[in-house]
Image (cartoon, rainbow, N blue to C red):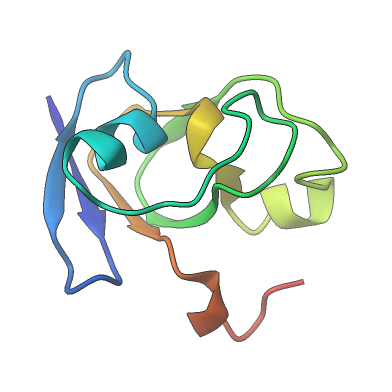
Length: 98
């Protein structure tokens, strides 16, 4: 199991399996990340990875354009940790959000 630090929401550290999405791990631990489709198309579960390595499966370019991907935004429903990760779930706190 890998550790996922949620930067907002009082900074809880949750565990996430390498074959578990960040969204599923967050839900399992009671961390609220809004979502709609769980298919990478709606963009509601967008988070920002502040530290760590991750892998993302196919996501809609409309929901997550390349310019945001380059800044380490991802959709929690399609993202798997490859190391311990720190993620920001409340994007209203990001000053450089596109």
